[in-house]
Image (cartoon, rainbow, N blue to C red; front, side, top):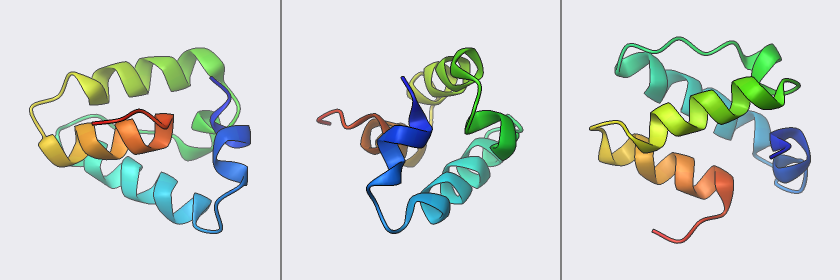
Length: 70
């Protein structure tokens, strides 16, 4: 998935990424936003972790970033 392309349509793309970053930090996973915007493998790892987390809000945000139904 190319998150940069996926989020380029939304006017709040950067806000969504920052929100995702802090939700990830809240469960102990640090996210490098610069890398998240350009490294497909890193994006996949981050989103996989997020979708498997115990945080319902983080799973919800990840699903929204991927465009998946909840």
